[in-house]
Every structure is written in structure tokens, then in C-alpha cells.
Length: 197
Image 1 (cartoon, rainbow, N blue to C red):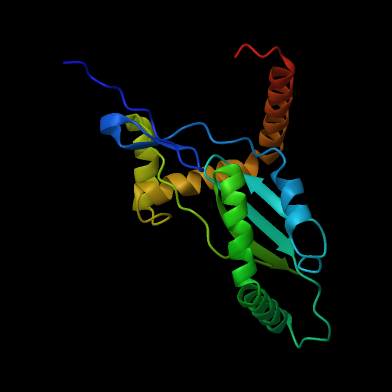
Image 2: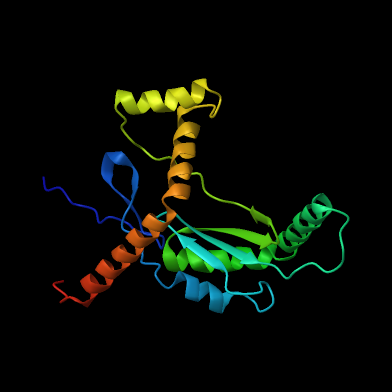
């Protein structure tokens, strides 16, 4: 009896079935033009300038600056309240259109889209993914996380790891920026090479 090998099915997001392991993410489409695409796709008047677009393997986050508030405020708390209210209004008024734009972007880039808005000193993200990251840590590394939990900095090892990643990101932002730029140059050079396929 001959066995037949079924073709691996892929959907528009680049997911493919792979035996016992269930669904695994294949290589996602490139998203180097995502910032330009969103700048061109978003309605005029939503933001005062091109939005800040951040891309990783799982998600695209789009955060734009809303037009400034007019009028005087009694204090910073009142201003912060007005900023939060304006962001909330923007979120409600643009919901259906944002959903449609996100659907198009998810089809194009194979990633979920999260939205946010900034106004003055207030920035709010509406919906973002919380993606589990599998990692293996040695005892000395686990002890660092446990110290953060025991000290009340975090409620769990998972939260402590997220805290540590944010801290490193804040203190190493310029280095990480240089690293990302270098990686982009490597990708450009790789793409200019001969097609061996």
C-alpha cells in the first residue's frame, strides 16, 4: 500500500499545519514598507503626522498623535483627563474603519494589528498581543526572576521577565537601534544577491 503525502495547507497569514506539533508559524511576509503603507492608507485628519509604526514577527502597532486640545486647564490632572477623554472619543469614532484597515494589513503582512493614540503627555494602546515566549533559563537566571518576585517588583516569573526586558530596552535603546539598522542593511544586501530559487 502506497502512502500519499498531503500538501501542507497555508492560509493568507502564512500559517501551515505540521504534523503532531499542530500549527506552526512559517516565515511571515516582509513588512519593511508597513510604515509607508499605513501612512498612505490612513484617512486624512486622523493624526497630525505619519504614525509611529512598530513591527515584530507577531504584531504591527500603529500609534498616531491626535490634534492638540484647545483651551485652558486648571491643572495637569485636568489636562490629562481631557487628553484621555479625547483619545477615548477617537477610539470609539474610528473603531469600524480601524478594524477594516487592520483586516487589510493582516492579510498583507501576516501579523495582527494593534492601535494606539497619543495626545500631549498621554499615550494609550487600545489592544495589543501578549505573546508567550518559550525560553530556557539556568538557575542563576531564574534566581534573578525569583528575587524580583520575592521583592514584590513582579507577581510571577513571567511578569519579572517582561519587566527585565523593558528595563534593558529602555537602557539599551540606542544600541538596539544601531543593531536594527545594521540588520536592515544586511537584509538589503541579501535581497540584492542572485536568486538561487
